[in-house]
Picture 1: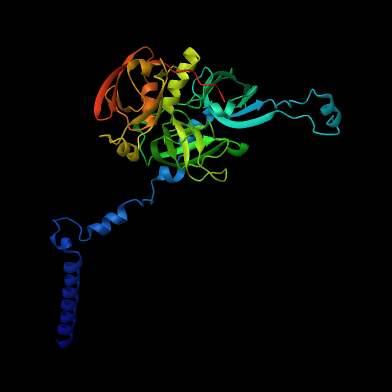
Picture 2: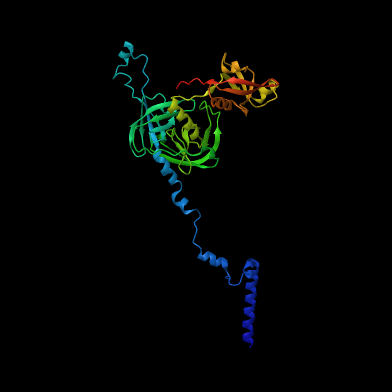
Length: 387
């Protein structure tokens, strides 16, 4: 009898201890519904499939689908430039002292390397103007190994965009993406031919949008990215995670010549607009009013006791030019174009360039303490000479 009582008391003690632990750590187990397992969490964990830390598709493929889609459209561009002719080559004394075998040998053509993007099955390619500028011969090599000579359809030094054309069949044209939906932090891939090692894909994020005032081009509205861009990437593609074109890689910030994680690309929609103008008209038509602008600084505003602190100071006006005929004077501060505020020189250039020649535009200026709205007839911007 004593032994039975001991067993009973021990069982009750253990049960009470288990009940205390359950009530403290898992009180919801005690309020289970009829028919529900005593340990539902354990049952569900055992019966559920094991999940990996990352989605299976991402773990296995990464951004390979985007690279496979866009890479065939990216080409290598080789620009051959004739060597500069020595101005003394016709001098008999020069030829005597530096004749072949006794002086400088015959110079070979300079070879420049870059990249390009096929944008239509008809053979049109986008690249940078600085890649093909001054070239006497341009060769293009596709990702599938095919080669072709390229013809320059047009170039725009002010935006650093050039359009080439090749004559091949079955060309893999890239798909244009929606640049207006691109945001800082989005993943992007840079595809090109850096250092002539062959086609290379690097990844990064969009670091900034609308970068300007860098002194690279006249018209700047760059996408900044930390995807590795190196010499030879110029003219290549910047694509989103779906493999759609969002930019044309153009420049890097570097003290060593290699990538420091600061690269710049021309937005694809801007490059497309330039391309369409070059194909249609052979040139890019932009508005122009004939002024010499500079940014308004707080010091200048204070010196001239201006009631505005943002705008563009006009330091010079072309005689009998559109601005002069419209009443703009040196010392005026442009604060708006067609009702849209302008706060720096780059914004003024872009706003005027977007205007249609022969149209009349309202330009708001601050003249001393007086705000004035002037009507200016826009002219066509003179074509820039290629470097």
